[in-house]
Image (cartoon, rainbow over all chains, first blue to last red; front, side, top):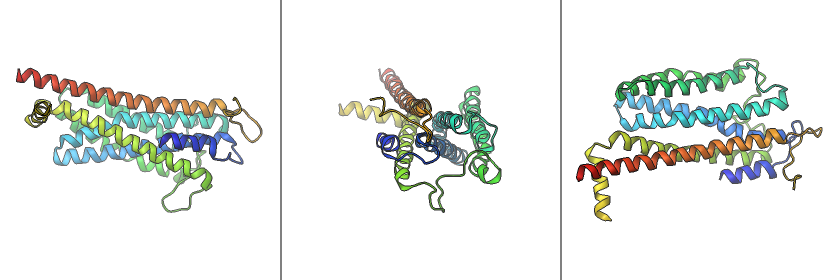
Length: 218
Length: 57
């Protein structure tokens, strides 16, 4: 799906009348920026569920979201810089959208470091989860930064309520890319969560019984 | 061949480095995410299997 979106965005979509071919960076920038925020929301939701129900699965899920979310935030920042350089004449400006996205990267890194720095797993889970929930305040700031402040960054191309401000020939590869990135993210998170659960529960009876049943069937 | 990969602005500015640079970084991030998730899953699976075998033996 990502390959189809890439092909459509790079070769089939027409060039923009103002930016020429440079606008094609949105096919990577928009899905990664979208996922950078969605991953944080998912991480915070996992943290809430983990704290309320003391669920190892929810903590594992939240824990798995952090490195993947950080990598997509990094990608959103890099592709944004690669777009900013030819369009604004500068790779970086201390604009509200860029700064809040950079803070998001720091939040992910702080979450990972906080979790790793506490040797006791249940304490690490609780502390990192609380941190993730507090950091959630940054998500609406990122999303509405282009509305609340006068920024260099353009307003949202896609909105839930308004008609997209992009031609349909340019829109379909973007939608495919967003869907492809989201499915990829979901698959990666499921794999990482399964690995994390196996690590946490390897000494428990239920996981032992699964593997003994598997051995019996072989 | 090079025409296929050419990316230019409306006034003919060369934008190949920016566009293909974005493609390269994106593919790299996607690949690394896939690789680390796969490796992590495999190593945890082996860990659990060896732990169970050790305790059964």
